[in-house]
Length: 631
Image (cartoon, rainbow, N blue to C red; front, side, top):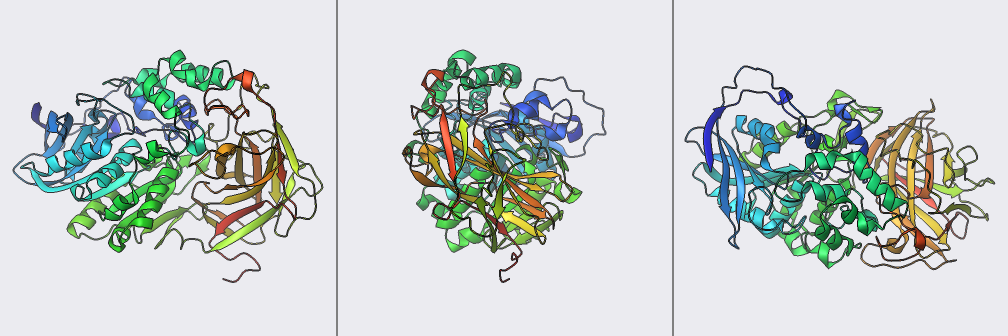
């Protein structure tokens, strides 16, 4: 153990910024573009910490911070099975007793030094515990598994230190957010408050959202392989993309990525064996009884453009569904216009979108104030006036509500119609209309995995461009536009699409995207959802499509968002195959997930019905009552 008293002599602005650090994916593709854009704009970085670790850093001379700090490195924490975990501790010098803020991380403790110093200056002790099998912690690292008992044991041990006041809180984003829920599930009394941020929900949004595996899991598993960081290997996006493209083209199976890349085989294979949400994944998440026992104050934080928003909101939903009245009253939710990285370090610009400075919160300071509020009775932070606080893009203002359900009480619905056009081109699109469609033929697109362009197209999310037209001029997609909105509407919540779909193959992947087209013909991305046919009725079981049968697919996992749609805006709906190298490709055969190659590929014909008999309807949750509805 190394123990020393120091004075902080650098400011956060001179240190490598930890911009994401967790599982920094946005739909599985933003990671790639984020690394490429690091040289151009730190605001667009998805995993700046990983590159920062591999780049030289110049430390400017600054006046010394007067706060005396004691740092203890490689302190050993015993756990219930005898394994010792390594923890680094930052605490104010002197004989005082302090509340402990703990993170439980697979990324090694040096990543959090700047944040730790910030909390120490606020009067807290800060502890960063290395996950079992990572850094100098003992045991075997099994990604996403078993963090609960270790986290709870670490919290109990830290509470008993002579410099601790007996209260241990937790914070941290992405993987670290997941660790907080696992610790509270294992021993809710050990954690006195928690601020899980952009938390991945194992088996739900990571590593296989909707049953579609992220290519990102290969470099991520490589990054956390062994006991040290592998940041340069992780950051070689050219190398990783070449591997992804081989699997996408069907030259190798997705399951072969570890063999060709060197990524760890065991966890990759273990995950690939569980494409649905089954007992393997359920064991990593709280049970209904465990949720019911969690009365700890919780502040959940997530962003509109973050890859783990779905995980954060599932934790929030499941906790509120099973919690006691006290547990529900103790859960706050903050949602802002942020990427995965932005849930730690918000910016006023993201992928062509700009926001007011009001959106750029100091989230560390907010969590400090919130901890003081729930633990010591200090005034409630002004940024959290109610249990749900959200940002309205366009209006550029924060608003609050007692619950997510109370935010948008109305629905703006559109029936899909071909309108006499094939809807297979942005210039001869179908219609999003308020009235029902009549008797009309379906709109059709074909997805042929044999046809792979030399340079695969990237999706808007991969480009970090939420204002561009993306692949609008490419074929093989369906387009639908609404008439101009007769009045302004504030979209707040999760959109949904009920689509009547007919396939001629047992399996394929379908994605839907919604855009706002402003009166000035500017585009604003509003959200995206996708489904794999075999999981169209839920992740709990596989049900292949029956060719020739019209089935209802419900796309209801759009990201939660909030944007003011000005009068005269139109809506654009795009329906297309999921076809990008950054996601495990479906070859439409109904074969074993991850083990198909081009030899197994089948051409899928997707018929979208939008008739009186088989309607397809887009629903938008809105704050104001649409024309013709009562307030």
